[in-house]
Length: 204
Picture (cartoon, rainbow, N blue to C red):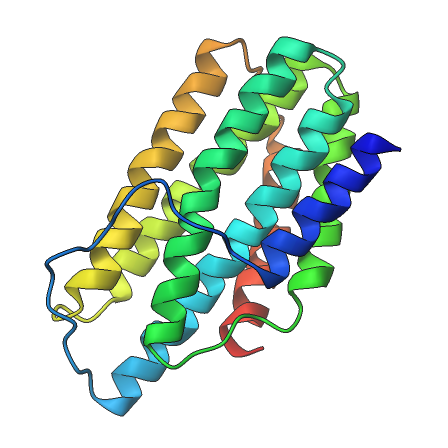
């Protein structure tokens, strides 16, 4: 019951209250006024990235809950805590751009939590494989968004570059801890699910 309450509290804080970042980002960079079309585009990209961080929280929570390995669960929880910074950064930048979070965030959270819980039940090596593959795909996604940002938007660029560095490190850590190689069919399914989320969150 205590764990269920903690998970519900985490859900509420993820979706409705982003908390505080333990690391600063973008300080000292000018907040350039973008043309309306560019501002809306960047806000939509940031909404997608924010939604991805909501999913990251859910994935790590689901994985740590069913990991069955206290040391691995603690490592996953530490990664989730670092991902909280990403959630805060993207949420703040989204607000600065006059955007709003995806209205489907509760749905994305529920789906990602279920996927994480299933990965945790599959055993340590496959749990870590899910982390490694997720972070690899997120790295590709952030690289794409960095290419699509206006050159003048240094603040958004600084956020995404810092996030990308963290995701690469999380993926390498999972591999070093013994992640298996995810089968191609599973990688494809994960990629398709991510594509549905990103394309939907850009607009909704």
